[in-house]
Length: 333
Length: 122
Image 1: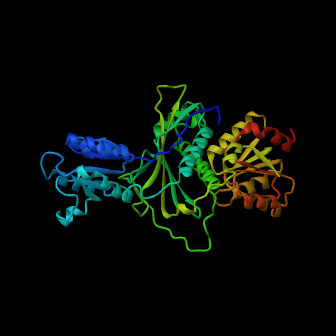
Image 2: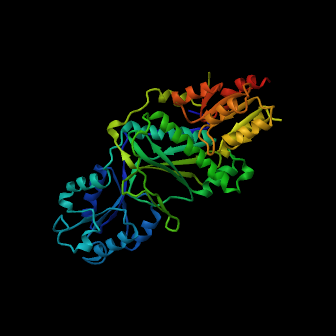
């Protein structure tokens, strides 16, 4: 690894997590829900009733919502809130905690469609199956998850100078909201997966790094957003290439390859790939070692395998790890 | 009159490679894709080395390398690919087009500078 960047490595045991809003006033239930979350790789985020919609607006990387039917002021306020959440963020599955039953059949049809499933806290283990269906439905090979983190860190280290890099535990989101202002999108295709990789970041933080000469863009071009675009674009290119080289298997060209429109709504910072497939996310934070007061740069990396996902055919190129080390060296013919 | 032509659609890479080579005492010119690279080579016979990406719009780097030999009839300029690609099939195609070498990105100037200098004769 290059001396330019200080890397915080991913732990040996990779745990893929998912962030959930927990909307529940009952302290004893919350305790049991927290225990369940700990045991099932969920990160619970507690929210007050009067702040739910605000929190929804500020969080772009949620997996879903655990909602008590009686959350808020009265027995039906949970249902009312579910309507508001569903209207604002229909992509987020809502799991309804009920007091007396763990099914939805007694609800009106317009209420039933709001929820992924129902559960009772005394029988919360049954929620696991619903989570597997909605959130952890894609099995990501450990070596793939680790490899993505490694090759992305290598790409970051080649494009930023004197920075400390940290990567959080990978997580699953159902959110379709875009983080930041700068956003790249590139197809990822081979014989075991087809989809897209996105990198998303904030302009102001990147701008500061250009000004402080932490990138390969001239500091005197820091006022031109196209230079910033180029930084994220080149990182995307490096990750895309390394992914392709490391995980062998070229996409077949002798069969029809389907495509679906990708829809972006700029007003709502929303992107749809035509499916509700969960997305595999990584969050990298880069800190300028010489300017402690500078804003850290956060880069969100998301993979959505919306066109094909067949991990049984997954393979890693045996020489790829060595290739990572030898990148940048000249192979003379 | 440039010694080295850097062909890459990424301004970041052009800047990174160009800055390094200029600081190392070489004269550098730039092209933004294969089509532009062919035009620059045609108009500047002083170019001795081309450092070229593969995946670019309008014309990719391997096609450009092939056309340098076939259309421009330029057999003397050295071409080195600087790319994220690393497949044997692509390298074979590059060899057939008469390229001199292959660098898998990212660019690490110190690792390649002596060879670059030898290829441009400084």
